[in-house]
Length: 87
Image 1 (tube, rainbow, N blue to C red):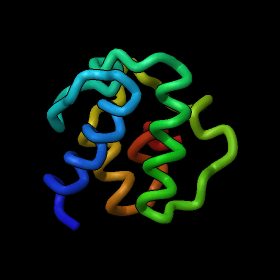
Image 2 (cartoon, helix red, strand yellow):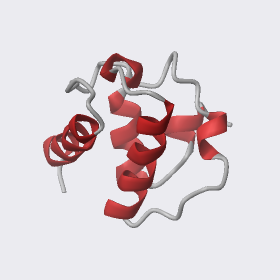
Image 3 (tube, rainbow, N blue to C red):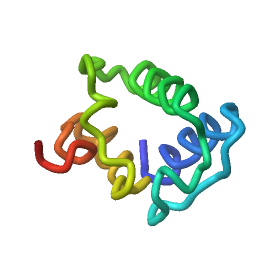
Image 4 (cartoon, rainbow, N blue to C red):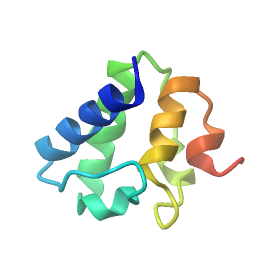
């Protein structure tokens, strides 16, 4: 699994939720998904990459600073520090 493959999965998931495709440097909010879209996005990503879902993880994410690069790093390492800002 390389970064481009993960980016393709992320963009496919975003497109399914009627959002815009993104690059690694874009904020996830640039996708224009709504709150339901984010919920589906995280469920899909966690399921696709066999990441144990952390209850309430969405509540701890600062979408004003979360980049696609952060999401990719989270997928590769399965370490929530990339999406929770070190919390």
